[in-house]
Length: 370
Image 1: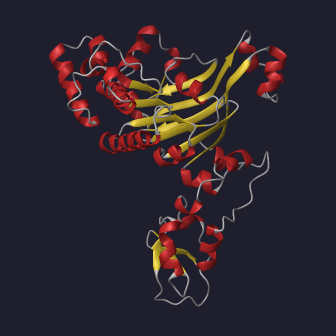
Image 2: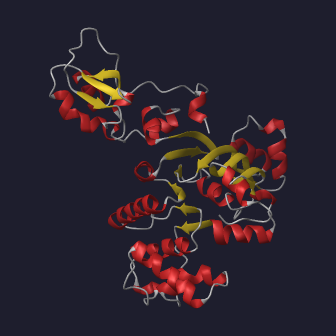
């Protein structure tokens, strides 16, 4: 791995996380530091702080970790702070308080030179608006970051061609941005980010400007690239279906605050509050949750020769087996029977019967765990 201003490779490699964020605040306006340090503001809402001080609390005491190789999705409604958060990860926006650790090193202590190295070599960002250089060819747009780093023409073109092949832009090397479709332009933006071989890729609503079919293709492309390259990815989106498709884990924000972190299953199966429940209300639970979420205890006298399914089986995939069986179906995890599912279980899920939502202030610790 590359090192940044005095941080040894062994120190960086010692951290299991690419990003660790601790107590991160971003307040816009005069007297921002006071908002963070003054206890009188701790219990006030963002709207109350704005009315009293004129300051906008964009991020409020955010903490989380992103393990190496994870696809971590940040989502929320417009104005929730998700784009501010992802920009704070490389100090494109300066946090008001808190820590942002990149591979164990707090980038808040880096000077301009160190930050440039982070942005050139370790973290690349793909924006909603592609920002392609209109008078440069596809090849030169992709190689631009390498050119800035002083890499020679032959080497940077060779690297550009590697990622051109990787993202499916063969034959478009000499085209200019205005000769490409929106989807092709997004591929150029993605290829440019990959060309510098960063440890982490940050995406800020990268596909929201694309039509649905191209958007789906680009989502599939990101999944394929992550599988092939194993890159850590942090993706900002307001689209829950996109978050569930791409994310290993999802962070949901509201008014600058962290509401819930979890896998897609955890967020759909156990929403932290009514806000999250509203987010996932239209998600078909049977296509997200596994049998691990819905099994019941093994009844006495269960026949020993009945069917069984892994606990990781999606409920929708289990429907033919469960409805076709005259006895409850065993749910197996690591070789052990942990419960059963029967027709009533499946019918409840198909009818959309959901567990009660915790009331405000009743969040369990694991729903906010980092």
